[in-house]
Image 1 (cartoon, rainbow, N blue to C red):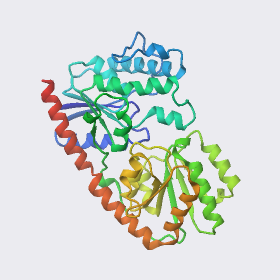
Image 2 (image 1 turned 120 degrees about the vertical axis):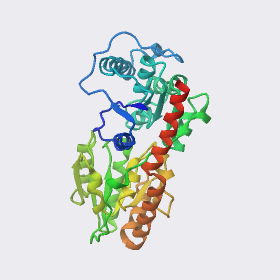
Image 3 (image 1 turned 180 degrees about the horizontal axis):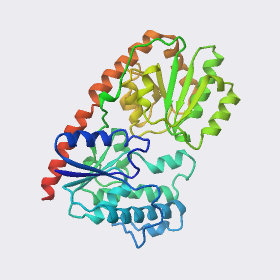
Image 4 (image 1 turned 120 degrees about the horizontal axis):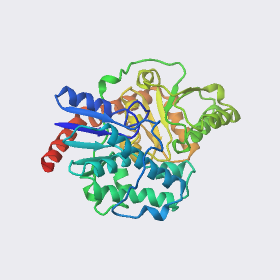
Length: 377
């Protein structure tokens, strides 16, 4: 069996897909399968020409909108790069981005193409204040779900919550398969430790959608309550300078460490006590499972895939979105009570180990690939 994993971003790019797909490849290759990773380099921009059409809607009604025009050019660029670089034949193509899926199906119509939707570009743009709700950008991007349903041989996503979200934009939502992400336990080295001052850690791209402004306000409230803590922020992005200024304004800059991007944060994470991320939306939230596998207590918002991972009060704590006071209350519980924190972290580890195993993902994908290849013959 020969499988192509079609990504958009290169596999070394930080993010949920990159934290899983290379390990999937490693496992399948070890089993004797052929599996390659394909992506488009950042330098390939503006190379594609010609036209790209959709079967389920006319994109020209949105022409002239910068984000739409850029998306259409990216489709052409990906097609140009694929024609240039992909020379072999494959039994199955598994795409992890709408651009990859649509291009692969266009160029290899007789090859089964499976598509996993990992996140929502339109929700990210909305939450980051770059587009308006109901605007042409959102209409165009949500129309792509119906196009994917029409074009690919199997449509998948990573959580029941995101399946529900996609259901509004497809004809047969019951056919969407949920395969939750999985992680190689060997990457994680949890260790027992005692920190005199509770160490909080968060890891994400520094954009409005991740809610770090709310986290800083919650930390300011912890300080007002005279509760000891240190917050470690791993990640980079356009909000970094704004967040640093907010931390200074709130009087918590000296209680926070901004690290920037880190290549292997799982090697660093086991030394901390609590993972916290108050996202405003999250299709799955890989980083919560990764933190759980490092024996950290979890605190997150009651949205999307986060609420599927955290059973409130059992293996972590859930708070409403945009509620700094509720987040401060939750953090206080895990800061002041080491025994409770320990119970949450061990329960989080057990759930992540049993539910988000890479072995489970490999079994599910193997069945899918074999079935798709047989139907494609």
